Length: 334
Image (cartoon, rainbow, N blue to C red; front, side, top):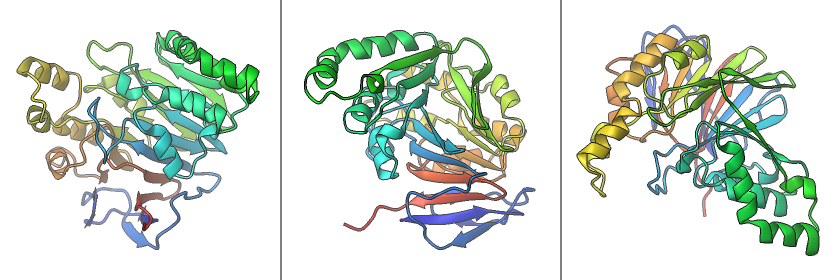
């Protein structure tokens, strides 16, 4: 089940669990509505965004899985990054794994791609995917996907040629390497634009903007403050941005050394910096992902941004239409 909220004509000052909204922002109010099924159906002119995994970096987090976002528009599904647990979250969201045939990668850090083998193999072997899996990503994407197929060559050959005889097309991969800011996909009224962001030495790294019937969402990927992101996010309905909590990083149980901590912080965006980005872009709703789900992050963001703000939360669903609807996933009773 879900808890369901609407962002309508004017923002009211209200706080509910996991969501903290700004006051005095020119945008709409928050209206509570009845619970809806987890796999919410979006109207045909609506962009649907599901934050499958909102966790930060390689550490295992059972509350926040690895970075992955699902976008649905015009009857099409698009997966952005495929971090740890992405296929599990897809299943929880009621999305058959085999229906995911287009994946866009922000960069090739392991925490953003580690679930790709499961998506590739399970989406074919038990998900009934009969068409190739298309992947967009930075330089190195094609080599990574080629080597994944080599790593699982025995399983692929057995299931394709000898045992089950699953369709050969379903295990093929078509890789597209993104080199510059550009429209990388345009079909059925949906446009996906890739733009470079600044993830320190991890280059190239990309964010993505998805436009459909006058609605739009921007996904930052991993980045420190990026002027290119601010440019590409202008006019967006929803901006999903990463953030890092320097204090939480320094207090992590594995106690990374000061040099590592400083380097990691330098590659990401602090809450105060993210708030400034949100203020400059002024989306109808600002959302965190690849971010700690903590009150401190929200509080620090509020020092520089007073507009509508949603904290990081796995399986959060956002419906972008004339109103923005925010649905919070609640596990079904055992």
